[in-house]
Length: 592
Image 1: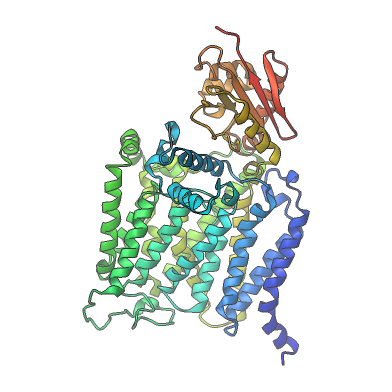
Image 2: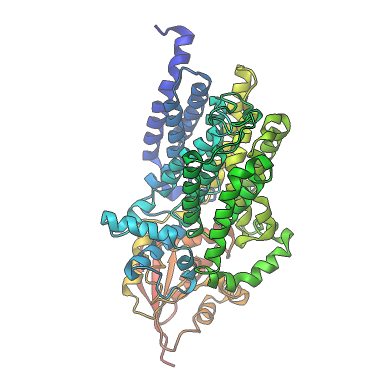
């Protein structure tokens, strides 16, 4: 019988998981989304939510220390953490989150309507050159009979993160079968994955495939565990070797089938996303540096290089030809590429300045902890982990990727860094103090994640009123009518993009953007001057655009309000839709 302190300790891992999930589910009932401001969801999530996070953290580390707790409970804790972090917006928001997800819905709908490529692509031509993600979703919609991906796209973040659990588990078990390291590494990964590239997008799909390829390759490396003669369950997985006796390994299904799987996954990556194949080339090149790895890595590396080059000179040739001069320029400015991702904070909201520094601190902590593991735990130097962690860095020096490269490098380095951090935190002896310290470090990392992942939700969230106003605009606007917005943070505005030219004022010239603050109507006239005489345009102003201006400082915080007040008093502007969160104006200029 369980009794006293021992009984409570034994029962705790089994009780804390269901208790945490119950507290989390109940806490969501009291969330008031209208209260979001500088810090997004962080300002409106109740105390019960944070209690649930604390219960999950405590329960996981208790379960990890107690070998009598089976791995299915550890899986439950990880899925619980994924749900608490990534399913919370999906449960709270009645509409799809994030403007780029809406844009991808429009691309998919266009492909379905055209029966193939995006018609009259214009700025969407990149999706015709890397269509894999969209074609897969189109196939799913046709097989299931669903009319649109809008119904399931909102659940992409929790689903993508849950699917990542499998390849990450396979990857970590390639370096050690020590339960504390493997499951601790998984927990660290989900505590640090703050970048947010898990929404309905080609990057999320390609990253899932990237990690799977990395896991399959790592599993076949000579120093991998579980290959019939490796290091077994010891911490120093790199000290042995599946073929330490020096006997040659014969080619057979055990090697051929994983290679075929890798090549298929590489092909899917190459046709789905422009950056991920290059990341894969960098990582596989790094893994091929040690001579002992080349028999396994070189076929996979050759496969992705050939597939990528073949795609670049055929389907992606227009994109490559158009952007080649920019690529060459970026190569000559490595410092500028690094700094392009560190946005200036002067115009951002006060809360966002704090968030930016927390994000930088979390990222720096991950890198420093991973480096400390390489220094303090010599056995990891004999594995592929340090190489996999450092491999994405050359791309940071080579290209800015629109200011995004620094975040993508962090994203692709994180799987290896997370395991290294787990190695560092794993106590040599099973002492309570070291276990508490490890739990404390991961709790601090998790706290940083919430700032990075939730702080911009005031602009990522769209109310039903905003969605309805934009849908009404698309319904009323005749072919050729121009649709104008202050920023691109408008849900569903890309629908029927081929018949409605778009004007986004924050992308206009510096003169027009400056004039918005002094004479909004004149700036609006200049931005729409390209249209033929008599062409009507529809001005869409919504809450999320105003939130973006305030949070990011892309334009003065009062731009949306000032423009709305100006058109309210101007002749020839008619309100076609107005609610608490959005207003749509129709303007028809005098002929000539």
